[in-house]
Image (cartoon, rainbow, N blue to C red; front, side, top):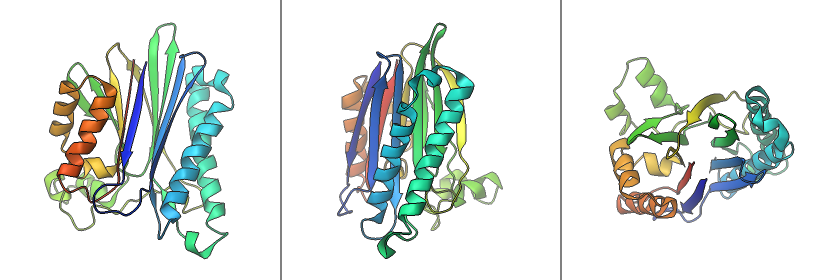
Length: 248
């Protein structure tokens, strides 16, 4: 099982509001990973992403036995996300500086079954998950963002979205409302398949073609994460950038 992550504050930002955590459970039969990209003034974004990461992992780790069942695991991931949402929403009420804070969340659960490995992906916001399989790269998640909705309605092209003035506006956030909906995806993993989780500090700068090129040339997960971050920094690094590489 492959599991590695790296984060960098970038060249422009003074602090890093990205957080991630990876947890292996049940003697290498289960792997949980989550990445959160915080938003909010001062240090509020950092507080939100850290709370979400810790709460998500703690909630999912509480009952590892349930995670081997697809239906129970999907419910558990949703419950973990909602727990993170509640914690941040309530914390935002405690201090004026925390008002309106929130975070994206993209999480992965890898589970070994008798038939092989399966993966579940959950996301809120525009942090992404990709599947790399048979030399191809496929985006699993769909950004919850204004420009993604505009693309879906045919108002702009994906190329135009890269430079649209509203490209950073997201439509779903963990922690800003009492409840938030999530997307959940299931897939079968074959030997050699990898899952890349990343924040928009990477995908706003690095194309899918460039992502695939780096993954093909860097099979070692640590080196691959490092090279992807290096590529984002070479393009100006205006935002925090985080990459996680998971696989079987």
